[in-house]
Length: 163
Length: 163
Image (cartoon, rainbow over all chains, first blue to last red; front, side):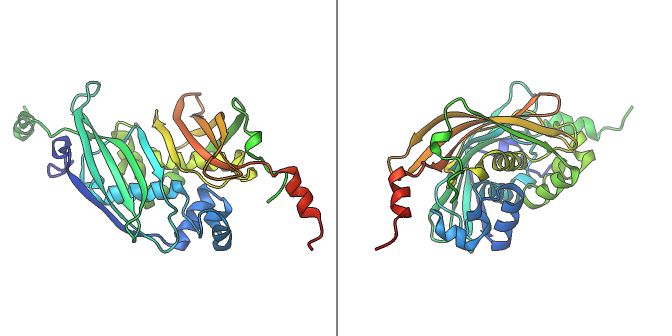
């Protein structure tokens, strides 16, 4: 556990973290859909064009997973993160089509210590993901468990020779 | 578009559809995490055991994707489904660990015609997913767009020879 990693205290409300860019590839859309959401409009270009989505479209669950990867690369892997209890909001506003590029930001809405788990906090984020035309395709909010910064006395104790 | 497929009218409130069983495999946990959520507790057994999750644990986003696949296999692929606008509720209540088996049900909460899209309806579901010990691991609600049953006159018109 690196001391340089982001702790609860680093997630001040209003702080923004960039997401992406993430190109959305045809093969990835089909691969995800084959495993998790094998509906025709997520598997086949012609079926996608014939659907209300207007083209080969990523499953919304795939868009959500791509959001998670963008979060990981932007700040989660660099934070003292312990997982998440769920998703508070997930809106798939517009189709995410093959060839699109996703980009966006996570905004800290609130951060607080957990009463039930000493040393742990909850950070609530809003995630905004747009396509290459700046159209909002995905709006989400979720909370993540992040450890508080170790207290200075812990550091001192750890640096003392053991008895 | 098969006439035998489930239409909006078939999703009466209270109707239940079984989900799973779906065994959760170590390789699948690691494969999903490598692509979408590469945090140590989703990639490595020892890191999982050292985390608050208590073992190699599926990413919550992976659990959500597995839920979608169970929905697809149970009723979505057999319905006149046109996609979903998002997720209303997604709670990851307990860790989903390698070796677990997921099973549950989707319950129709409400079904209604859409005003904005003639012939289309919205079905709101509650999804309950438990592990092999019957512990609720995932609770979710989401709405799905499903076409209404074709009107009889459409069928008659379609069966007439074209002028």
